[in-house]
Image (cartoon, rainbow, N blue to C red; front, side, top):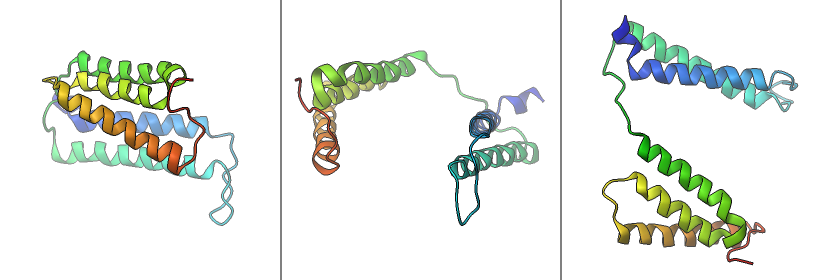
Length: 149
């Protein structure tokens, strides 16, 4: 029984079930409406219910086929690099603008990958900053500063 609890599908099922239950609970006060006249709670309830159903299917699959591989261990370093990159973007978007914050986001997130390749990181950061500037400022016309004010 303990081998089944270490299956990655069990972990995914628990995560999906928790997310679905939180979604259902958080939107229970919203009117659902009907299929023809959807209310603000219709889509969140539908998606959350589908997450719970997916969790049930994954759990059933573990019971039917037996345990698979164990959940692999993971390092805290790459997770910390991703969280730090998101924090850097949030902190830097106002003072340095979209271009600088995007470069910081992509450069710091590349620390999660081994080995660190500086030229590849620079190319990805410049390309990502250019792409985000084109999409968000030029195409979508969002009022985001590209450069420091």
